[in-house]
Image (cartoon, rainbow, N blue to C red; front, side, top):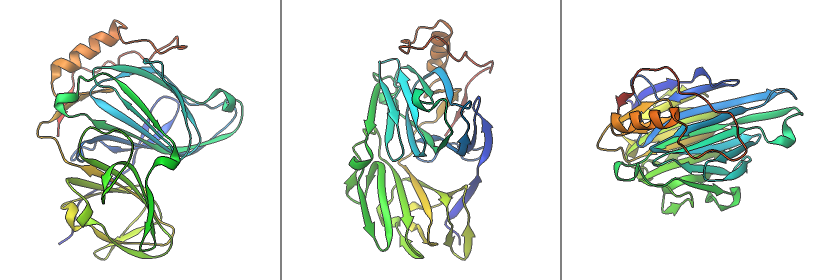
Length: 297
């Protein structure tokens, strides 16, 4: 019997002036552990007049994680944080009770050709912390744990795995892990996993129980402890998951919460422009005309 309960293929989504591949949420699987949203950005080549310009917009009840393979993005937020993220680095913003931020092409790249490729992820906060004060953390590439085992290179981007811990300050038991194969290798990783587990194939392929899986596919395991597969040479995959929460979540636009009341309060706060402004920004993304939040697990 296969240990894969669901295969999710990327679905195109327009986020303004840029097309991404949406992986989560999915109709029949809204969350994997605490992970509630995953977009694959690119790979895209942008000309000298094409830039990423995501104006200030709000978040509550979650942490955002940006991880790039190519390119650069300038993050600015209502706490006064201003940080350019480059490949291999991590930007981790915890919204808590509410924060606004913008994401744009850095000024020095706005008139030149450039590449952009990476992952943008939301991790829901546990109920007792969903109204915490906002925080921002930036991790340089060289502080993330990296090691080699059995011909596979591992990098722990966030969370805990196999006795190692990323410095990214997560708030529930989780893992976000990169594996790169030098040659064809069989990987038995289940003993170190916990909670729910998803595997995303960025490039190359993996084989599991006689079936080959290709890039842009997200595989959700029935039992994370039984994860065993073979990576083809030159394959890059990402494991993410962790302990699921006991209660469901409402989601509306960029807001995630355990109650509809928190969603409605955040909507009104954004209408009234009561979020702390992002320094140097003058525009913002208005509240979309959707009726109410949707609850899911």
